[in-house]
Image 1 (cartoon, rainbow, N blue to C red):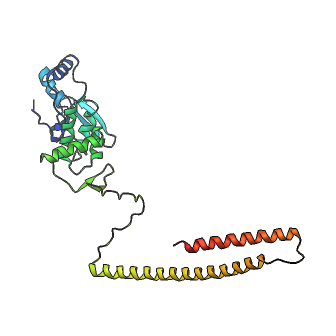
Image 2 (cartoon, rainbow, N blue to C red):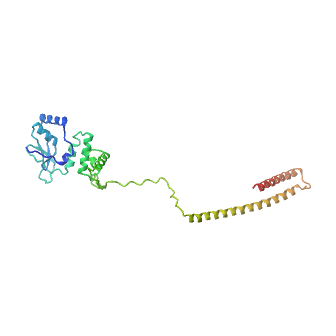
Image 3 (cartoon, one colour):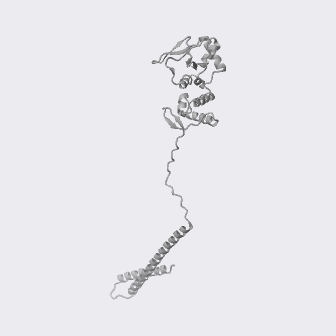
Length: 277
């Protein structure tokens, strides 16, 4: 019987060992081979463990062959040791995808074994995106990214500038970071001014302040003049009210006295305001 080599794509998954492999040998010995072994180009693509178990159990391996390329039918034919047909490249267009599809849900992999599967896939297809690899092995793309970084750090995996996504589109390996949203208008940093310019600016500000002070003084002088004129007028009115008016009734006298009191109070307040510095 021909000794078959294993197809490189099949080596993505680890071989069964120990009790798991012994159980498979016992099952095949008792029940025969239930699922045929698939070869591609004369190498075992799917069924390495079944092939080894058949040899250990003394059972002749059975191989799968597709006899209708258009309908994708597969038949088990004893004694036929070639699982590809007349299509040249064979009826399996993507060996890696086929191996993943046939094994990922069949095998119960430990976390470290799944990491190795991801690492091996990345070595075979470094240009594939993390999401594309994750979709193949039913893993989160963050998990794939973690394995990728680890393999890149130890030099087992090359850095690639572009990657192929799940839809076959080429994408940059690292996306440009999105600009942070503006959180309000910020004042630009003040520009440094040379001493000469600073002196000119200071002189201009001082001149402006001097002008404002002069205006205030002029307004104050005008206010004082108006206040003095008002005092004279009120003093004249007070003097006039102090003179007796003939034939004035008592009520009118009272009114005049009240008016004079108001005028005198106004004069006192004016004196106080004028005395205030």
